[in-house]
Image 1 (cartoon, one colour):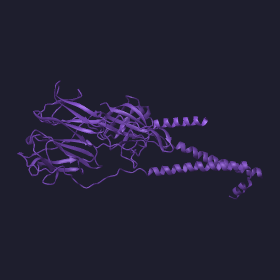
Image 2: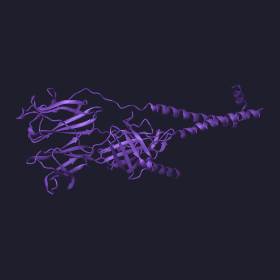
Image 3: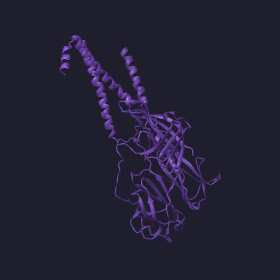
Image 4: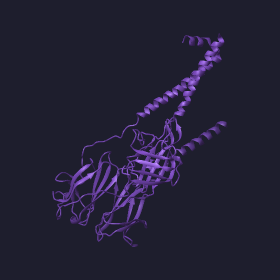
Length: 236
Length: 264
């Protein structure tokens, strides 16, 4: 320490001062950036919350109170109710494979983050199915999201952009029931797009949509600048 | 003059930016329409929308999947299955972003018509929603409730579809009884309602003796507010500042040592 103080005192020339000052400045900025990044990463890790559960009491509402006496009704009968779906019945997808881009992975169930985004899988080598949306193979748009990368490098949907029209996507459920989809189109959206309905909204078609990040990493928004959505429709 | 040019360029840039920021209007804002055949004496039917066949061979108690239609008015024609001639025609108006069930109700001979009502495919997380439709032209007003217990729906008459009731998921011993009495018409004990599903129980049939229930179920469907966060900033980009910082430390150390050496 004494040496350093001595050294600094011994440096008097203006050019030397400038060199030392600028180098110190670079050191502070660089480490500051690393520090801020570490802090934000840490903070982000805690911003994800589970889905809120609302538990209300049982409170039936009464439609009307008209009290017409009945006509002849006859004997009572027992009817067992079998619920019917009004369109094709979907599956809860638990496994995904896309031969074209070497994807063969399990599917987690994801909901919303605290700030209303679609959730993402815990494991960056797996994908997440949006559980508040449609089942795969039912009328509407079932949605899977996968990471393009993690801090170490490429993740499950790193090659999603390579998918072309006609490429086949296969999902199965726990019982081994399978649904196959063929890519029909792909679109890039800004990360804060308001066109959410195009990806999640109703349609009479049986769609499976895959989402990942694409574009440059936006330092201000702390996220990739765009999202890639691959739209696929059921083929069997 | 130079200032003016700059101003023009700037305003042009701002204009372009604002154009790029225009909201993208989704193409998916359509009406979703499905058809329920609830006319007990009508044969299997085909349904035509503005002259185009949309549904083929729907029988009594069948419900179709959703058709996607742009908001507006449509001429809906009912044909006997396979026939070119319409037995009934009616105009039905639909709005964007709304789901509808269009029920063919009444007897073919008397009071046949289409009734359109909106479906709500959302439910509070972990709950079940159920509504009841009285689509049996010859049946009197009914109550629906727990066997020997409280009513959920009172005094439903043909034609009526109730609002949705929110219930905890579970198995309910329900019955249909003559309105305002304890006279059971149908025993629906053991009806199971699952969480995050929406049920529509339609009472159909010409009269009480042929009364039956079509229980239509839908999975709740929501959309998130925003796209998922499916990427991270890679470590490589943080390596740069770290590297620069470390190099600068080295350079500073070296510089000072050198200077000291020279001074000596």
